[in-house]
Length: 377
Ligand code: XIL
Image (cartoon, rainbow, N blue to C red; front, top):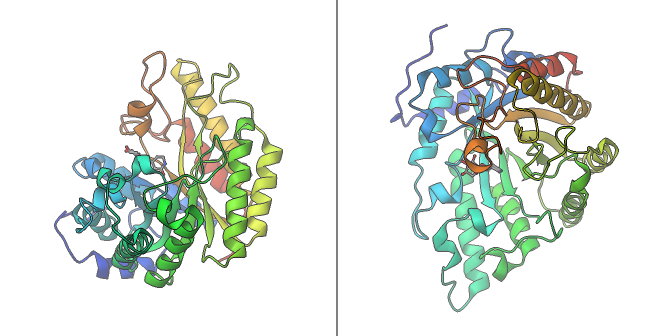
C-alpha cells in the first residue's frame, strides 16, 4: 500500500491522533507478517523510537510505518528539547514526529515528562534561581511543565513515561535534581504523577527505568521495587512499570556473552511489581553487543537468542502489553555513539541492519509474539 505523503508542517495531528487512538493495535501500513500485526494478534503493541534526524530518511520511515503500531519520540518530548528556557516551550520537533505518526495511523507514547536525573535535564535548570520560596517555585515549575506537555499530547498519547530513571543503580538511593533539592525526591515524583493524571486522565502513567535481569542489578531492582511500593502506599496515580530493556551493558565483559543472568530474581521482581496491580511495558529494547564476538553471523545469532529468551520470559506475564525497540535499525542506534565496541566494529543492537534488512533479532521478536499467549482485551 503506498504511504500517504508526509508534510512536517501539518498542524492537524490532534484530530488525526484522536482517530488513530480509537485503533490502538492497528498500523495503517502493516502487512500480516509485520511485527505490528504479529503483536496485535496477541494484544501486544509493538513499536520503536523515531527522532528528528529520521524524518528525512524515507526508507527508514517506511520501515517504521510497516513494522510499528506505536512510536515514541527519541528525545523530542524531553525537557532538553521542549524547554529552551524557564519561560518558553518549543514543541516544533515533537509535533513533527507526532504529525508523521498520526498521518500513518500509528500510535504515540510520551517520553518523558520528568527525567529525574540532572545530567539529562536542560543546563539552565541546574543554575536556575528558585527565589525566596524555592519549594513553591519548584512545585510551580514542575506542575506547569508536566501539565502543559501532557495536556498538549493527551489527545494522541495514551501512555506517558511520567518519571524516568529516578533511582541511582549504584547506591539504590533516589537521585537528586534541581527540583527535588527543594521539593524532596519522592514528593517530586508523586507531584509529577498527580499532575499528569489531571492533565491526561485517560492515559496510562508509567515509571520507566533500566533495572534488568543480570545478577549485578540486584540493588537497582530492589530500590525500584521499594520506590514503587512507597508510591502505591501513598496513593500516587501510577499504572505501570516501563522496563527499558537495554539488554547487556558496557560493564559486561563476560566471555559467555551478556553477563550472568538471575532469572529467578527477575521473576521475583516482576511478580512483586505485577502483584501491586501494575502493568508492564518493554519500552526501549536493544542489545549492547560489546561483549559478543566480532563475527557478524555469530553475533547476530547470540543477540537473537538473548532477545528471544528475554521476551519469552517477559511475555509470560499477561500484564505486559507493549514492546518497544529503541531504534528499528542499526543505522541509527544511539549505542554506536555513546558506547562503541572495543574492536571498533559497528554495533548491531537492533532488529534490522544498517541497510534495513531483517536480522535474526527480528525473527526472534516475531517468534516470541507467535508463541505468546493472548493478552486480555
Ligand atoms: C537517549 C537517546 O537515544 C540519545 O539520542 C540521547 O542522547 C540520550 O538519550 N534511556 C532513556 C532514553 O530513557 O531517553 C535514552 O535515550 C536512552 C536510555
